[in-house]
Length: 463
Image 1 (cartoon, rainbow, N blue to C red):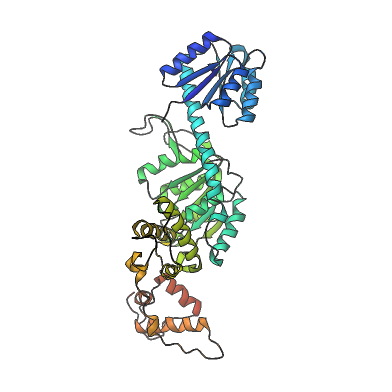
Image 2 (cartoon, rainbow, N blue to C red; image 1 turned 90 degrees about the horizontal axis):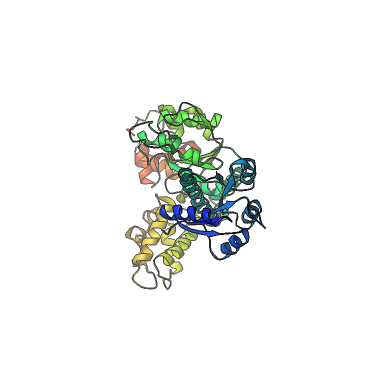
């Protein structure tokens, strides 16, 4: 990474030289301008990470230059230099868009600290600008692929929820795109100009999670050598995405509850609390209601999180979306693997559509990339597909179905299949679900839907 570029604008050449020398000694690339007009000309041909502006200059004052820069290059981070007796003017400058101010004569130690903080802020501004441009394009609701009714219903609710400030709980299996939906909600909300901050509650060790969330004060524990902001404080004004909230320890759940209810956090080692303004979006693949019954998740937190519940359907429940997703990932993978000439015959798409995709969209994306990377020629063939996609679907040819001329009830057929599978497996739900190639949870749901229950007098099977 190159040196940070800093421009000093002051009509005092001796002060400019002193500041330039200090900046260069600290590893920055420093330049200077003797007037506001010279600074404007310089900034037209060269971008700077930070501009230091003296308030009192001839012709065009520092405050006028500040307003011009804030209007023309709003991302520019500016520090104001002012005489000791003009602090009120400096405060006015900060209201006009300056990041901070320094009084003359400039204290070298204070100068160094303010410069470092301003450059950190400058970096953050650039990252936000870059991310906002790319994420607005990538995370619009229209860019979440699929037009199945199951998905569209979720997107409709999410789009309406985005305009609110309510907490949202996104549930769905691993790989369904919960984080993608959370980002779409943020970037379509009034908070889109602020940060979207993610913390994965399952990926951080329990003993470190509290510090990552809420931050700590210097000396709060062994190794806490300086104050640290937590993810909640970093997300102030924006959205905090708590991924895998079901893996959060009970003792931290109560602190998240306090954050939602009171908008307050308490850093480790701090003697008081501080206010924050964050919108909470949480996600999990776990059954939180079952965890409540087990005593591993707080019921009050669940209801605070699930003000607006969203359930992202698994890919097997929206098979009509698979071909669109395959084509999308195919085009992305061709570009990534530099294979522009590669083509996929339409006849291969059904091979993808009939797989159940237990890893959901994430698994589908990985498989498509693998196929693209390893395809032998410029036209993909069945032999380029992994074995689990090449195999023919089994079982259906052995099922005889009589199609009467007056029509047939799909519900009645499904109910009969479930009953026959249960009878074949002696009403063992686990074995019957495996036989039908569905999850036990799905089998129980469909049994309840069709009013199927074990016949009385039949001995309970070990399930």
